[in-house]
Structure formats: C-alpha cells, structure tokens
Image (cartoon, rainbow, N blue to C red; front, side, top):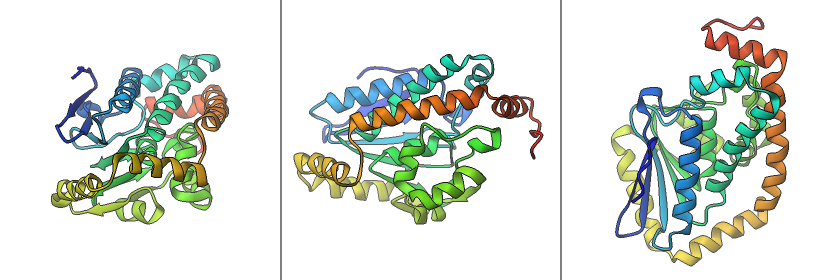
Length: 264
C-alpha cells in the first residue's frame, strides 16, 4: 500500500481499510500535509473495489486536537484569499469523507476538538471510549467552526449547534452520544471489541445495499455533492473573513502567546 508521512493505511483480505492518523506528538492536530494525505487516502479507498469498510482512528492519546499550532501561526499572517484557499482544502477533505461510497467508522480515543469533531461527524458511525472529551472550541479564539458546521449540524441539530458553536464548552463521551456525535460510547477496554462487533454486523450486509442505503439517506434528508460544494463556498468565505478580522487576529495571537483574549 502507498505510504504517507502523517498517517498509516492497511487493508485486510476482508476489505477493511484502517486509516490511522499518526501525529501523536501533537495530538493528531491538522496541518496542510495531513489534510492533503487524508484526502488522497480516502479518494484512493473510495475507488478501490476491494474495500468495503473504512475505519478512521488515531495513534497516541488523542483522536485529534483540531488545528496544528504551526498551521494556526500561518493563519495570522495570511491574507483573506490565502485563508480561503487553505480552508477550501479542509472543505475538500470533509466532503471526501462524508460522500465516500464506503461505510466509514470513526474510532475515537482521548480528545477530539474543532476539526477533529468535524471528522467524526463526517463518518457514518462513531464509537468512543467513555473518558473521551469533545469540544467545538473555535469561538474561544474569536473564530468560528465554519467549514465543519454542515456536518456538525447534521449530527447534533440546529438547536444544539446554536449553543455549542457559541459557548465552546467541553463535553464528555456520554453527552456526545446523547447529542448525536457518537453512535456508541464504551469503556476503554471494550473499544476494540465494540468496533469489531459493528464491523462484523456490516460484513453480513450486501456491499451494494450498504452503498445504496447511504445514498438513500443523503437523498432523503441530506445534501448532494454539488449542493455541499455551494455550501463550502460560503463557509470558506466566512472563516477566511473571520481569521483576518480584528477579533480573529486578537484571538489567534492571544492563543499563540498563551494569553487570554481581551474578551475573557
């Protein structure tokens, strides 16, 4: 299989592809390379007829802490147009996962903040250990969860989104399950076996039936790929404008300087 710098990929004989984000030293935070490699990897797996299920997991203590600090440093000095282009890459990744024709499962450990929650919400189902922590934390930096918002709102609904995108509260796995982000939360020792149980159930259903069922849900209550691209055009414009705004710059600089912004 193809090798990557920020993730590992294995595919077994039964058609299970396991994608492991592999930047444990930074809690699997996103940078440009990781976004590009995840996009490439999911596109490759989507085109592979031998693959039936894709498991997305993470090495180390955390699923994903969101944006990498060095990536965020680049946001401070980037122009609005540069920020928009950068955000379009993330939007393309999320679209690729959300509209993947294969069944996707997120296996969540540790922390999942910001874009990490977005990844989870793009998967068909998600299982987490019960001590995992979650947060849509962008507003703490004077930013907004723009690009991930369509998928987060799909998962938790408008009412909860109106709260958590504004408060940036941290919540636990049981609450994440109640909100709709998770399908299951289990004891840490049972995480592997629960994922295996779901994969076993998936192995009993027809490959075409799974794909058609996923498309059916999208058609009835979701969005088509062209519709999502139009929404992404809006959300990437929003986050690009916010990043270069006075408040966005203040929040980012305060975070990078390990200080509280002036509104705290």
